[in-house]
Image: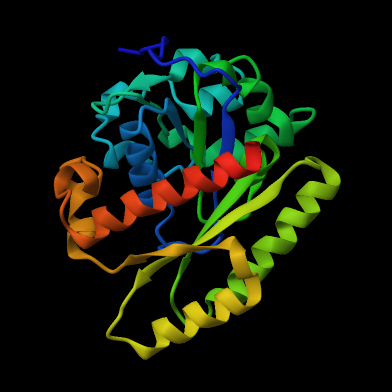
Length: 270
């Protein structure tokens, strides 16, 4: 049943952060659910919007498919208000707008709408006072769903796998962010880059991390998310890794990342 009344109302409108990378398998969803969980543990009120038709964020938070009847698809096409699609998770302070299978066809339907890039931004407009942070889990492509997320967002967070073609992909995304800034959302900024799936046994991981830090400087978080089997196992149990095994290296990394993100947010927001 939908929970439309988050208990911890925010003093300021929520910061909206899109978690995006057009490449799949880089840790977007894992980052969204574990960062949100760690934020909620610090008494922040957090909403995740699952904008990926695969619905992995919804599954990873243990939300049964039968509980997703009203979801982000209905919000985007205007069949439901955002508040009608929000459901509570088992984590205090963390709410979710789930994904649904219809979302895969939303891009075709949205073409018919005026200001189709602004659908999510318009839907969020009346709900931002209820949260401290809204994290949008984007699909692994630069399509109209991702564009809606970028237009709705204040900032973009980019998980980046430590592999050979990583920089090439993220530079393309940065160009897209710049185009969105110029055309639709002048306030959009690159909030930070998260190095994920770091394998300390692999010299390539070290080289990619060094190259990314050389290119993006302070935009790259100090915290690095390691390859960790417990992180991979957690979604099959419908839990963030912070609940599945809080003492594993992956969980500890996401706790450190949340601390770093919140510190950067305090500096940005004053």
